[in-house]
Length: 307
Image 1 (tube, rainbow, N blue to C red):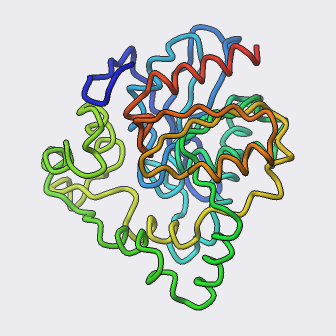
Image 2 (cartoon, rainbow, N blue to C red; image 1 turned 120 degrees about the horizontal axis):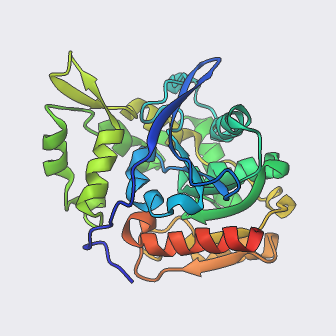
Image 3 (cartoon, helix red, strand yellow; image 1 turned 180 degrees about the vertical axis):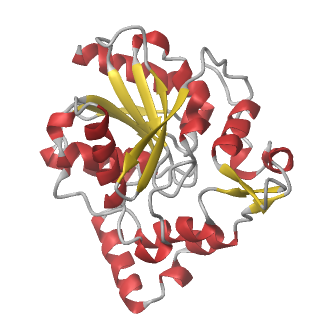
């Protein structure tokens, strides 16, 4: 098993493409594979990240897959409308994934995601089961119904910012930097990035920033306001719908700062019999960066079983 200290090799690079929607463009990465008959998958990234962050991981799938990874609304190079005042629900990410798939070819795909992207992929599979052949979910954000009800009361009282510290942290995030290299030096080996390979940190920065002030500076593509609005909106309550899933599901979870603690996993196993759970004891919420080989193995196993 590799560790986060090791460098993850990049097998081959993707093509950057764009798909026009009525409210902007979806930017996505494409690894087309050797044949149109090989399995196709879509990867959805975590909150505040971008598709390029996962290039090292996804490139290793090679020509055995047709792999696509889109920048979600408000992230990366995607230009779909992302006004924080209009962010009411993560369901918008579900709808964007489904619209993108219909615009590409409308065929069933294996959906893979991390954190927010895993939750959005799960919602897409519930909404349009005919378009999803399987789910591989790394650290999805799935909260107990009781906690979701409590958050709803806090929103109604207008105190969600005070009781949910992630909102305040997102709003304080530094968004403008003199250069990408300075960002890299500030992030590498620190905080949430401590367990990330250096190349993955560079990809996160390259894919998640845009030029600012005529290229003299750079800014985060996912603005602090948009990220904070996403935390305020929170994950939707899916507990009444999880049992409706028809495709096979693999859940990959860590143990450090996980969004899927044991009691949530038990609830998921009860709601969705047959769920495959892969626990990675040393992993954190950033499991795809720390243990990419486990995610790759589960993607391949899901595709093989489906084929």
